[in-house]
Amino acid sequence: MRTRVPNEADKRAIVIDTSALIAGFDPFSTKEELFTVPDVRGEMIEDTMSWLRFKTAIDSGRVKVRKPRRANIEKAKVFALDVGDCFLLSQTDIHVLALALELKTNGYSPLIATDDYSIQNVASQMKIDFVALSSFGIRRRLQWMRYCPGCRREYPTDYKSLTCHICGTRLKRKPLKRDDARRG
Image 1 (cartoon, rainbow, N blue to C red):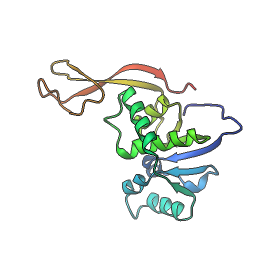
Image 2: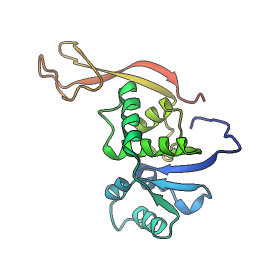
Image 3: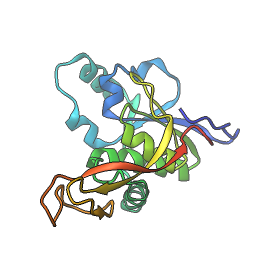
C-alpha cells in the first residue's frame, strides 16, 4: 500500500473491488465509509459467503453503491492509457478507479481495496492509495509497452487488436519504465 499522511480534513473512504470481496474483505470489519460501483454486483457469484456478506452490507447501508461520473471515467481511462494497463482493465475496474478519483475530488482520502495488479498500478499513477488482501500487491509502478514478439513491431498502449497487423502474432507486453509505487 502506498503511504500518505492524511490531512485532518480528509475523510477516509474505502472503495471495494470485486477481488477484495472474493479475498474475504468484510465490510463490517472497518469503521471507514465504504463505496463500490454497481458493476461489482454483477461480478459476484451468488450464494457464496462473499456474496452474502456483500449483499448484507449493501442492504444495511454499510456499503454505498455509486456510479462514477462520465468525466471521472474518462480521466481514469487516460491514467490507464498512460501506464499501458488500459487493455487489461475491465469496465468494472475503470469504474472502481473513477469512483476513487471522484471521492478524492470530493474531499475524501480514498483507499482502493483490491488484489488486481493493474488497478493497483493505475491507482499508483493517480496517487490514490490501495491495499491488497490476499497478495503482496505491487512494489513498483510499471509503465507498459506492447510489442510483437514475432516481428518486434511496437504498438501504442491503446492499440485495440490482440495480434500484430503485420505478421499476426499475438501481442505481448513488457515494462517500459518502473517507478516506486509506494512513494507518496
